[in-house]
Image 1 (spheres, rainbow, N blue to C red):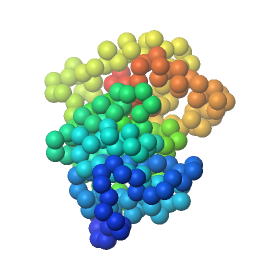
Image 2 (tube, one colour):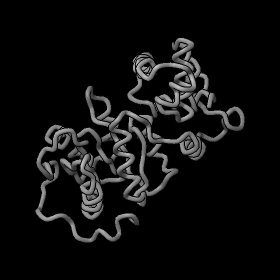
Image 3 (spheres, one colour):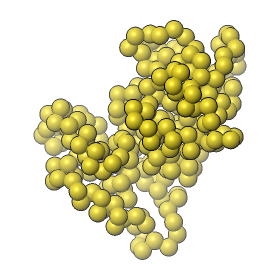
Length: 248
């Protein structure tokens, strides 16, 4: 993990997976770190601990430990490694995001074209980070996801889909689920569809507000309604659906 290579001394104390790593800080973004590499966990903890508004509240070394760790530490955001023994990050993300009131998930990987990344995003993860991401960008990602924003650009989404698309699609650039995606988007009102297309282009709520001449509160209301109508967990899944439909 290049961004963490210099972090060779883990924080003092021998913590058990799922235990809280520090006292509660009111208003802080609570983060659970899930990775089978103890050095990676220590490095992420040291990076996140530099921010006054972020608190690492627990760790897990395997996807099997995630439900208990989430129940014990009540995180807002989970940093989830994909490749782990026993239960991998994909299965853990699917199980976690299938529950009401679950925390946001950012998956960790060493490859930006990993097919498991796309599957994790479809399962409800809010984005992904490469393990050599600079510390400042890791903090930015945690803050962004905790605020309910997506952290996946349309370019990266298209690259992921292109890398893992099934061979023999009907035409170049077509996604195998295009017709299904178009039908799913058909349940939206015209204004909700406009918002969905903007999400597919990676727009923030503020940008959508300006482009569509809506108040910020109206944009948020539209996003909430279309998530319910589409039975999706977050903005990234909407963006992927728009990409599947060939509309971005």
